[in-house]
Image (tube, rainbow over all chains, first blue to last red):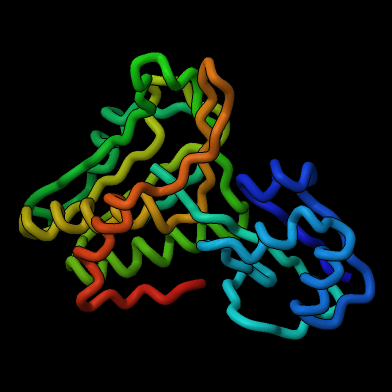
Length: 80
Length: 156
């Protein structure tokens, strides 16, 4: 089970902030599931500057996901 | 070292006064306060969001790096989230060091990274609607000033 969180512009585009995805083994599989269910998000999630955090640590490439995982898609950040 | 992410407004002057207490080794203190601009009426309010549990440790790692790199004796960061009106403070950074250059550079380093690297997302609401703000090219350019021996690891 992966709890997927969207932030910033990604959240507005999707129209949701948080979704549970069941039966997900790795990040690539999760991205495929998201693309199938939410085709409009497919390109945006791969967009420039979008980073991915698994259990609050940034990751690159494919990683396996444990049974209770939080996956956050983070568009370009801007503070201050 | 102190990092706070909060929705409440803060008084930058009072924060600076509090920071200046109990700094026996410091020879100088520098502070910066970022304020929401009106932008000629284009901005009615800002909406900032963080990723709780991710944003705070990220800033703490940044402050730890600044303390080491610039030999800071103390540093403080306050960053607001939620709805912010023009004229209100968004961010406060204070640094203390034995010598002024370290304090100036430490504050500058912290602000450059908070501006375009820290995990916040900022939406501007105005008369023509709302839009998400991404760092400007100049903000990314500012970061390169620190990249020669930049050691902050992504995700740290």
